[in-house]
Image (tube, rainbow, N blue to C red):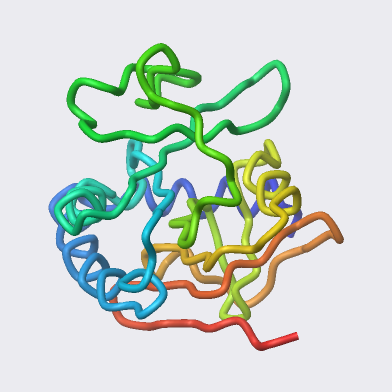
Length: 192
């Protein structure tokens, strides 16, 4: 199957999950993320604000802030096809709807942060393989961000088990993650 066909199939399956089931699965994933040594040791954490049927990152973000870590969230620069990172201390007051209606940092009050400052990234995605290959939404934003980082931080993805597929068509520009955490499994990328 092509990337677009896989994307369409996985998004439809994720959307078909009952909201209560998504909440339950998310409640099982979050503690697994919080227990990761790479997360516990991180001082600066990049996350994202879950949207629609995505994994709800609210409890993860709350833990980042409660743990005294620096929280960084992405702001999409659509014209440049890039992501800028901004420090966020209060998601309630410092976020506003951005591209595609997704809540993102307000550039007027949230300081920009260098990707080099980030120790741990919670990476979003549509589908993953057990080898930690990733299929995003198709814009290449995260792939470019990861490729452009001078130092690669720990990269983890939270996904429902239905998002893990045996194979993905990958290209040389597609970036893998280090870990994929589901409600009942953890997949680790093999060292290169």
